[in-house]
Structure formats: structure tokens, C-alpha cells
Image 1 (tube, rainbow, N blue to C red):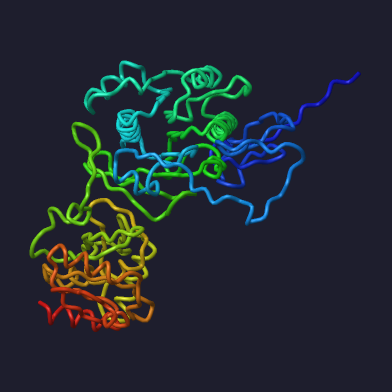
Image 2 (cartoon, one colour):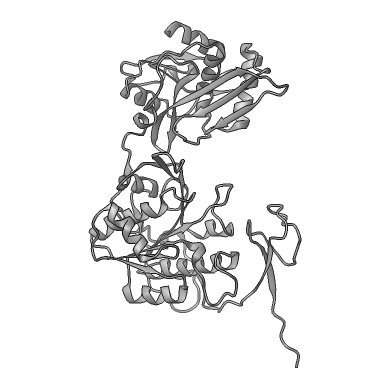
Length: 464
């Protein structure tokens, strides 16, 4: 009798692309020799995501429900003890949620989760911290810098998923922390830890535990050089929430951003500052971002961005200098380089600034990375200020989207932006003319509505 053939599929170790046959070059990421063979295991008929925590499985055949039959249960939320972390999660940690946290090495992912475990353990919740990268002595050294911990927080150094599942059944924690998912390995998969199949299998097991047992699970994920979570792309689709830690690990600030959240907004950010005792909340991000702003320097303009429901003032810096080469250099830090090149072309065509023979550098001070169109006007004014070597008024803020014709277009939530500028002592604000008459409670802030870049330049001269 002939042996039964084992079906296999091929996965790209770089991007997770799946194929029925081996290929030398991955069609997804164009990388060479990254396709690995993995056997396909048949799943039992009873396998699945499982029923919600606290809800009994329905006997008999499967039954489809109408919208009226479904109970609108928002679920139980835990207070993490860190206000900025609660904001990003959406008013707290949902019971039974699977949350993925990614970021560069040394950015503070483990430190943040250890602080969250400390606060939640002090609130009486049972926490299990599983580390596959650090020893118990290393964790203790880091924990001693943070503060005191209760006995409700327990630690385990293990990479075998079978052993971890046994400890989970014995301890029955309310919150489980896995640091990191790339070090976990299941005996049912023959591949090495960190491979596509191991990461996918480990996440699937943790997802089943989270949903069936009602355990809130945090998993730490490594990132690639492009800044995305390493492993298969399906990893981000399986989890409920994806958080990214941003910022320079050599600087003091950290920004926690939600890029996916099934239980809250994906536009919220949390701002932290790294100190000797771990991460501390920055309750006033605008003031924090404007610290050290130079007085009387050209190429510096304050603008206002909206992250979720929070307005944040930040400094846009620009440096324009004559180039010594035939091809001028363009560089943007924190802003989209393609957008900056477009705005430079608009300034040259509509305003008359000769920038074709100049190097241009644009920087969002503080290391923040933003894509909001409201930054356009601030970038244009900063570039013009540096080109003419004329300093902008110190108490001026500007925001608005700039079109290809040089027009200044409307942006969202102007009232919040103006109110934030007034709260920090700014006296003048340049914004789109279409929204200048709709501002309520501007306080001591003088509103300057402009229709295009020429009017914005004239408004700056009048203010100065």
C-alpha cells in the first residue's frame, strides 16, 4: 500500500507570502531564497475561535443570529494604572483581548509592560509574565528600578508553548504577557522559533486561550528594518489590537500609537518620557514638544496636529541652502518626503521662491512622524522663512492644507487647534479663510484667515 503523501505549502520568511510551489524570488517582497516549506496539518472539525468568555457554547447545530438577538456587551475593561496607555487602548484593557506591541529594540516595550503588570498586580489582578529572552535575574534588576511588586505578579522564563500552557492552567491569570512571540515554539511544528509557521501557531494558541478563558494577552513582537512587525502579515490580522512604540531610543520621549484597535480608536497616541525609573506619562505633549524651541531663528514655525481627539502643537523646522552640486538634495524627518517635494514645487511655482538650486531639509522637532495635511502650511512658511533668512513671529501658529494651486484648504477640528494654541500663550493663528469665521471661543488668539500662500506670507509680515 502506497504511503499517503503529505501536502506542503511554502511561506516567505520575510513577508509571509504563501505559495503552493517553491519560488526563488518572493512575489510579495521581491526577496531571494526566502521561501521555506511547511507541512499542512489537517485541523480537527471542532477547532475554531471558540465562544466568548462567560458564554456557554450553544448545543446542537450551528445557528445564525439576527442583529436583534445579539447582546450588546461592551465587555469588562481593566485599568492599567497608566492614563496614556488607557487612552491608546480605548479607556482600558478589554478582558479577553489579544494585544500586539511592536517597536525597535531598546525602545521600552518590556519596561512598559512590566510597569503595566506592576499597577494591575497592585489592583488585585493575577499577572503572569513569560519571558523568552531574559533570565529571571535580568528581569529582577529591571524591576527593582521601577518599584515594588506584589505577589500577584509571577514570572516564568520559558519558550516551550506546551510548558507555558500547563503553567497557565495552574495559575489561571487574568493578564498574560509574552515577551516575545518570536521566541515561542510549539512541539507540533518542526520549524525553528521565529519562523513563519511557529509565529503563526503560537499566536493561534494564544488567541484561543484569550477568547475561551477570558485572559487578556499581551504579546511583544520584533520589528524589521522597515519598522513593521516581523513574521507573517497574518499576525496583525489575528490580534485585536496592534500598538507601535515610536521614537529614538537615545532620546527621552516615546510615542505609543495604535494602528489597529477593535475596541477603540486607531488615531490615539500616548506620549511617554523615559527616565531612570522607567516610563512616565507626559500629560502636556504640546509643551513637551516645544521645549528648547529657539527664539529669533529663521525656518522655525509652530503648527498644530490632531492625533485622535488630542491637539498637539509642534515645531516645524526647515533649512534651505544653496547647493554645490548639480542635483539639489531633499530630506524630510518626521514628514512625508514626497509631500515635502510637492510643497517645494508649489512654493517655486506659485510664490516665486527659487528652490531648484537649493538643498532643502524639513524636520518635525521631537521625532514625531505625522502624515496629516494640516502640516502643509507650517512646512511652507518654515521653508520660506529659511529661504529669506527671516525669523517668524514667536507667538504665531499656522495650520492648513495646501493644494497644487497654492490655495489653503480647510482641515478638521479647527476649534481644538486654536484653543490649544491659546492655552500655551500663542496670540496669532493663521488658518484657512473658509474656517476663520467659524471659530468659537478663540479667547486672546487673533485669527488670520488666508485663501492662498501669498495671503499667508502677507499675514506673517503684518503680524511681524
